[in-house]
Image (cartoon, rainbow, N blue to C red; front, side):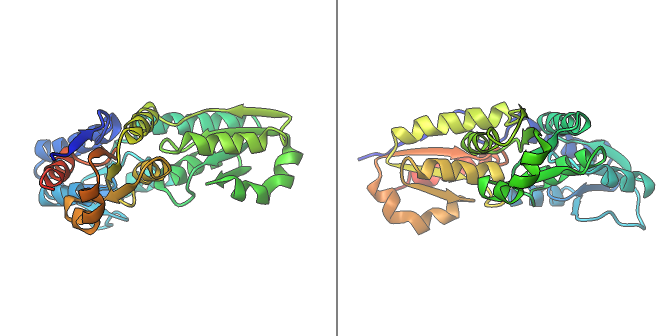
Length: 288
């Protein structure tokens, strides 16, 4: 019997990622004789990074001192110190920080300026979170990064004493995680100000994938293991129906038994997964 394979409507590149990738490629086309550098991976997808490299666009951890050209700040944003370093080294800056990430940075700065102890809900090592924290730190040092309630419990005394607590969220976080942290903070705070800065694309993607999972025997989540929004999708869906998280169609062979047993298969993908990768996965699934 032919399998019923359904792709989520909102799967693959979000507008911030699409903007970053298209703009970076265009920069090279318009400036063929200039060196183009991207600080860190433009997006969490090796296919895209390899494609940029083939166009002569360099992904680097730090800018070379002996060159000049254009430096792209990726969609996750960067600290003010990084922007200063780019300028001091004589590079032209192209800031491709996602507009939604910029909003989180602005809200974080606002809360610190207003005297709130800032709680950033997110993964401390994630580049977006590092940039949010660095931008807010210029205006105050009472900042906590918490990936979950367990981390916050270590700061219970400080939070209670400060009384004014402000919250922002990494754009790709799960709403359930934000809710549990806010529930924990309510009894500790005299004044609690919460900005739900999870981006609309993430919320929509998670909500739609949930609905698809409810009518599927198997969910396939496509995207990098380094991508926060993709791993969160896999976490959410695995609580609803059997779920596999793959980066490319090559990995489907590792789940052959699950795929063969499933009649209704739902497919979704992270915000940094190109259409070509998703298409390859669906083609391969149709072969079972």
